[in-house]
Length: 262
Length: 248
Image 1 (tube, rainbow over the protein chains, first blue to last red):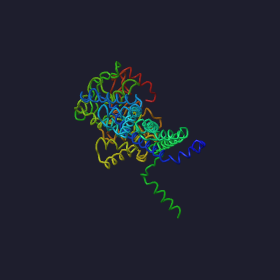
Image 2 (image 1 turned 90 degrees about the vertical axis):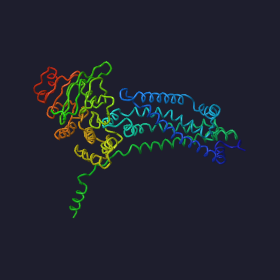
Image 3 (image 1 turned 60 degrees about the horizontal axis):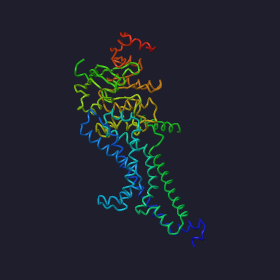
Image 4 (image 1 turned 30 degrees about the vertical axis):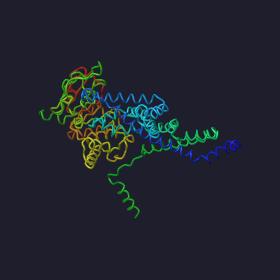
């Protein structure tokens, strides 16, 4: 029956019969992308901030310098490892490997969140570091000059500005995550791509199903980037500001107007 | 000058960037209510000297004493010290993420742990003094250079420092804006603020300073009262440097 249909009829047929499955798959994809991007950002910020801690040869104790150096090396390894290997291999490695090697049984959901999060974290760490470096060094000097510690300056002055510079990268990572969760079907996560494979395999409608799935992916990414743009605009604040009327000129002028009117 | 009036003593200060000697054996003192101008050609080490005093640069050798405490000592609480020594930068360095009022409140609240009301009151007092109290809701990028620099001065004052360091505060401004910033500085000087000013505004330095330091090639070439330096300079380098400024 389906073999007699035209291209558009097939698409309508698929949507009528499998629409809910596609939507569920898209939902799964979105949930993994949102949660993992969020966790990844937290990891990325932590790593990026630690990596930009300056060390003062003269004032910091030897112990503090050694500990921070060691942590920085470990974090560097983490970034290189997860940036430098494909996520699909990491997923297999963690889902199947962790159970065998360390006797930890991770569910596929836990594995999925874990893999995408630490992957995003590795990329975000570099973006955050770049964001911090890109803030004018004068800002840190201004903060130091009024007696702020490095930490106080980071919280109150540097990070709010760096964060603004990093948002496009967060958006980038989120959109990459929406698309790249498709590799998680290898550990049986029923995401949008997994639904496509099932439907297409059962009815031999590869082209039609792929069309639907591409449209859904595109919708998700375009809407996301639009929302992110709005968020950026919101954070940039108003272009205008109001003068404070400390001499009560406004009231006096109103009074004068009323007098004149009478 | 009585010993208890002394705020800063710079002794045999040396600063190298790699093999390049920027400051050699600098000695001078800052007493309460002093207004000291540091003049000299670009690259003579004036700004570096100021940055060493605030420990934005770590001195290579020598000592800087704040009252009796050696701030070049590794155990010194540099954050507490910097609260007491305000700095105004050439490029203002206002915090871009904060409004004018917040710029002046963040130090007192976060560093001095003051109550918000008190910090606001203090910030408003100083913003009023520099004539920027109307602009408290503006962000730094919405202001002109002269306005930004006046806010930067208010921010430094809000920490209630003992000394204010000015690192070429008018060099990034056009002539019209220079005036508004210099006026604020003159007011501060007349009110007894202790100030250390690196500047290229010779007429201003001449009129405002209780003491003038002329630097050349990383050393203090000549120092003395405003009259000593501007009217009766002794050294050839000083004479040559000042001869380039016509309207003195």
